[in-house]
Image (cartoon, rainbow, N blue to C red; front, side):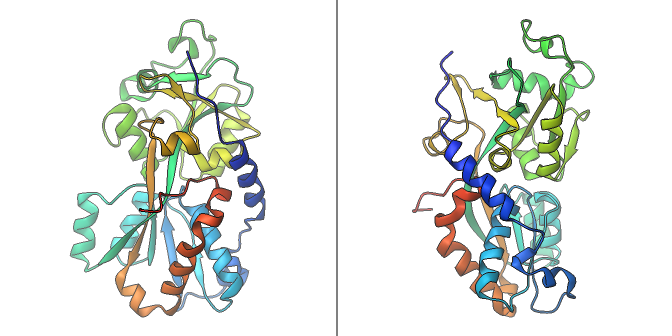
Length: 307
């Protein structure tokens, strides 16, 4: 089977370097974490996939706007949007668009918002670095592993392919508050939120990456940025959607061949906060003006200029 050339090593090297530089200091200002929240504090929450992008934007903005207090955290897209629609946050990082229920919640609470596309992402299916057999999977094989009927049934590698080892599959994936989980289940299993539940779940990509790297029989999924930050301890699995096995990369995301696991990432911004929080508009202008110059360092893919 022809596997298209993986085209992401340069991005991965850059991402690993920038991740080393990301400290626990939101907005580049440790005092911002310790100081009390004020009426001018900008709070961003939501997707852990988008988190590294917004966190890096806050760090860069903080270098020039020392008096700005930008707090960036993550709880998952769904959990973050619930907070956003309740008026608890100013920015909601999201790895999917709002669903009808969330739009109704925002409307009920009088929350008007802007939807801003940020970047392209591809979902990465990964295994342990020393895995020598799972070089590619078909969408049907992924579904057979992850669908609800697989729980307690499809538990060993040789149940996926007979010539693979008779070893347990240890599954890792995003939690049920994650937009990545919603997207993965929709496009792999066929229904949003439908999957087996006997897997190690987390909203924290770093936790998942560490777990996959420590378990020789692991198989997991998350945004490709997490792979790029840990390219030296994880291995990508190419996905065959019917036209040959394809790796996630800048090229395959842009040309549409990495289907169906390519998507846009978003920021949702509270319009009232834009009016009432002096630093928010400046932060967003700084964010988007410089984004395409440094986005690749976080492991994500720039949008087309038209978008």
